[in-house]
Image (cartoon, rainbow, N blue to C red):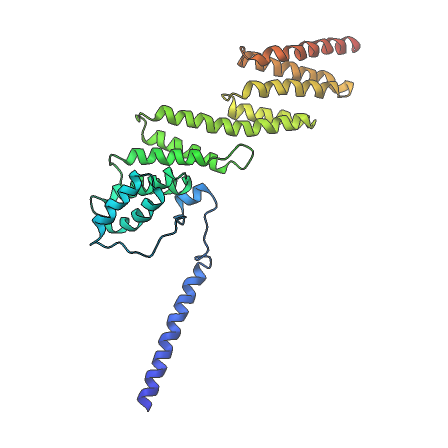
Length: 303
């Protein structure tokens, strides 16, 4: 009886210790079962995003590897990318360390890319570049990661965190592969993304001007020209500044009008010097001339 009691107590202590360890593990990561990625940067750099495909329970074994590999290739070649991805994901763990490994991971990533699931494609192409540096596909995987990030970039009206990350990814590619034949393509994507950021700020400039927040518009244009003087919106931003400063001056008390008309003339000078061929130079000339006229009138009054 005493022996049985001792065994029962011992089992209870072991079970309690196991439960305590499990509880401790979950306390370290209480959200482990509900983790979700919130941004492109997080999904590529920090977490493996969850697959969006639903897989059946049929297992791929070493014995059925070749058969399923050929089946996956057939799905891929027939553009049945979801079916191909289902098999490639099952095949990959068995292919690690074999000649099939890099091909399967690349095609798996490409299934997502061709299915326009760019967030998962970006993650897996990035993973391929990390796992298989120096292969024939490494540079192409990096380029496809760039393209996926580019496609994820949203329209200018919303938060641009993903656009900024895409710019970082493109710059990283250019730095790693300066002699790539895709550099021109990358620069084109880079220009488009930068112009998207510029457009967002340019729309804010117009909003400030249209709502008569003249000082805020002046500050916004100043910052805009520091960062986006190369953009297609830069000449028009200076033109809006000319209009902004002219309206600001015309609605000011006499004591402040001269300085504000001078600010209008200075904005025109910046526009005509930096972008002499822009159509906005001629459009702004009327406000420049009127500003000089008003300055002369004010000078005559003060004599």
